[in-house]
Image 1 (cartoon, rainbow, N blue to C red):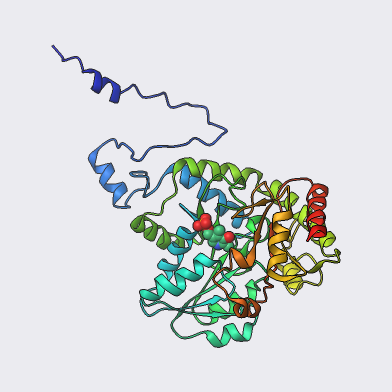
Image 2 (cartoon, protein in one colour):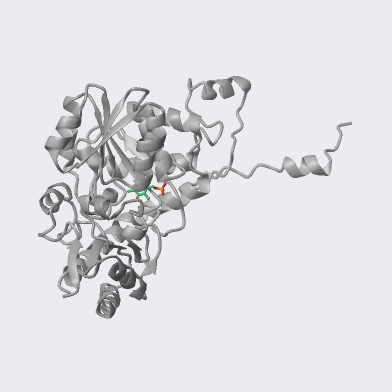
Length: 403
Ligand SMILES: *Cc1c(COP(=O)(O)O)cnc(C)c1O
């Protein structure tokens, strides 16, 4: 007689749910660390990359793949070649994966001197320890970029829109310089999102996002993603598999859901930012507003050329840097005086958020370094959210009046 399984066995070996014939409209979450095979040979073939399939979720997971494929579809929408994506647990994991895949001991990187702090630290600290040397240059000065190139240069690294000055990288020119020297152009396009700019269309070899920002869009998930041609993205996958910065399935679900409303959210945020920037720039207590949609912004012409989709007035992103008169203390008072706008790290979410630049994102820079970077100690970065423009403007004008 067959033994009746005990209660623990019965609990672990529950009946399998039926596989529905109908397709789910919402993305299914494959919250499983591991996948069962029909036989031992299939397991060996998938693990040995001889057959496509899922074995273990650090390596690949269907929900995570669905998210990465979604980003690749948006970034590659207008290209005539296939674009692939690789998702990561954070933007920094994605940047680390891309840079480790493209460099080796003795390699050289030419990077913007206005980088996200974590990326600067990665290049200047960790990768330098492993024998990768970086020259930091003014990425808008193409002669400076050209003269920094060496025979060993493997990567030119830029950000589409730089924090907090919203300087715009001239991607086609940078791609030409990189490719003439046999290097790759890697672009962190977090501040732009694929709605504002798709760097692969302008010659970049890889585009990277901190998906924590616009793609997730609700300040409730951390993630990163890289997109580009399959050969290149496969080498990045290999780094991810070895270093383990893989995205969790639940987070991939949230990020993929974010993609469905990304154009709606970003166009609206951009439209609000445009009106906001133009209005705040007219306040007598404001010495400067950095927003590429304003004709006086030094990056305006490049932005017009690269940010070429969507209705006029919705093309230039939603980060506005406001510099009130009065230096460091005035910047702090301005940030504190805002009521509707949250004092918080990060950007790209539904809530409008403010960071006083000199005391937060650029706290490592002293006054001379801030000046060299073109940043006033009073500068305050506003990530424009989805509130009504009139409310944000009223809140901001009230705070400016009180400084
Ligand atoms: C936030 C951010 C990152 C890092 O992303 P995480 O998801 O926080 O790891 C990289 N680049 C830019 C431009 C960012 O804004």
